[in-house]
Amino acid sequence: VKVKSQFKKTSTANGVDIIVPVPVDADTPSFKTSTGTAKYAPEKDAIVWHIKVLPGGKEFMMRASFGLPTIRSADQDQGIGSTSKRPIQVKFEIPYFTVSGFQVRYLKVVERSGYEALPWVRYITQAGDYQ
Image 1 (spheres, rainbow, N blue to C red):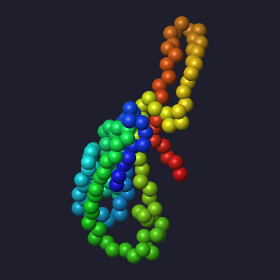
Image 2: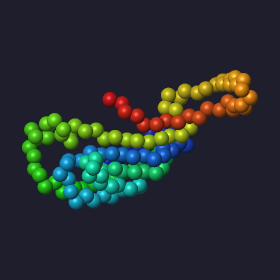
Image 3: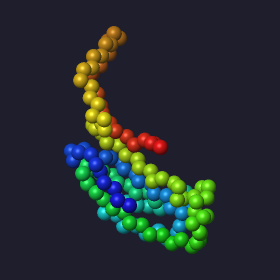
Image 4: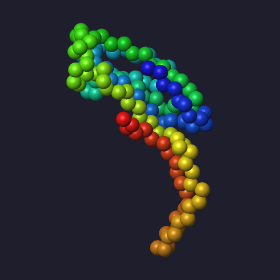
């Protein structure tokens, strides 16, 4: 699995989790990563690759190998609940960055209760489900 950050070099993605589904009967996992840590999560039937900080414009690799004791035909792999249909999931957060380039140019806070509000906007980009 190769991950490549295609955002500006001055930004960083924090708490990146890449969840790669594997067959239900996978065993004896072994991993090699160029950064971060990879673990087999049998309760999810997936590999979870965690990268604490992913800088912009960088590329990293994770290699995994498993033993597969059960041999199935291609027809069986296309059945309901098949692991070949499950997508890779990516979770991340990029502070002070908007993908769209959206910016708030003017902000006025009207507060009558006496509380002193500061006109400040925090931008953040988070992973979501897009199907």
